[in-house]
Length: 139
Image 1: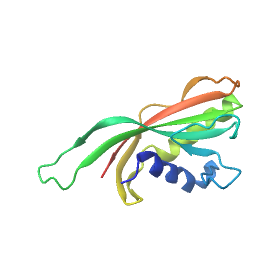
Image 2: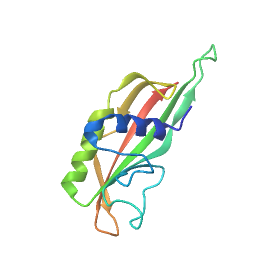
Image 3: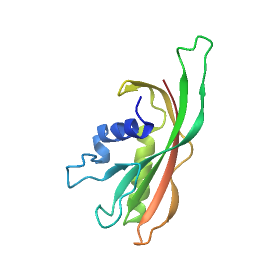
Image 4: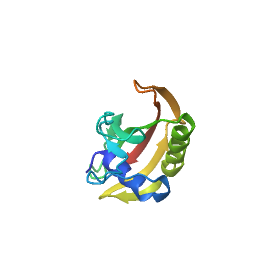
């Protein structure tokens, strides 16, 4: 089973209208997992998916259908406040409510936004950063 961030990254790449590129060999890469890139080596405008604490796993009586309740946080960094917020909103629409989908061998029963896009801060280079959290059920 992959880290949830890997599967969410694949979902975002598959939604071509978002324009997100993960391939480390592509100079247009703008999607990252686990670590937001520094300014020296990465684009100003990017999206990063972080694995965050979720709920405890469910143990069923049979013991063979354990459900896991992880969560991820998605952070958008952008030079333009409104462009950044709009991208995160589009990501929310692309992920919220997805259900009964299998990605990389893992069944996602449901993905749910824990809230809407939220402004986090202005980073040291005066770029707006926004976040949203997603809870999910998977097995």
